[in-house]
Image (cartoon, rainbow, N blue to C red; front, side, top):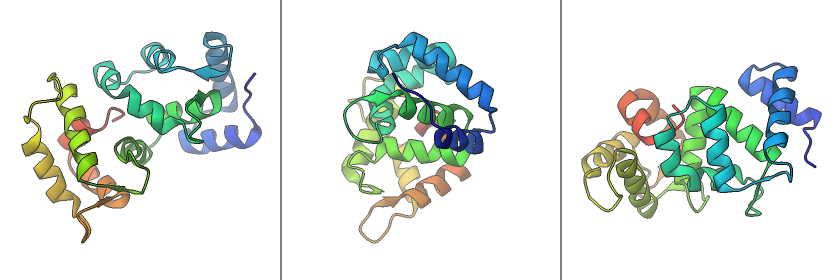
Length: 181
């Protein structure tokens, strides 16, 4: 059975401004919902629907990426600790923390950059969030604007810092590209 250690509680308190008792209560609720200590993608969607005020239409379309981003030890499973930290930072964290998680969603190969193939995936997510099926090219203009505002490095890659800076300056892009803001 999973448990929250003091270091995790301290981290969550610092990043979310929640009280220890709130974190413990929240964690215990998760243990009740998923007693084996591991969350499937379906469990994660249900938790977001039940416990969050995030836009569910957006979260539904990116749950695979969310699942991958929360699996910080890359073992193919999201345990309670990973979920609690990820969920609380994406729902209660600062705008920068939410955008940091969004960057992790799009940085599929986890190399610290968003490249052209990852931008293509981003375009499909955005288009699905807007109601398309992910195969149309309706989001190209939006992404061209996004890419130009990100100031790609000399290799044409978007760094996390430039990603966060660009989205922080453009509310519409932030709302479209991040399911957490």
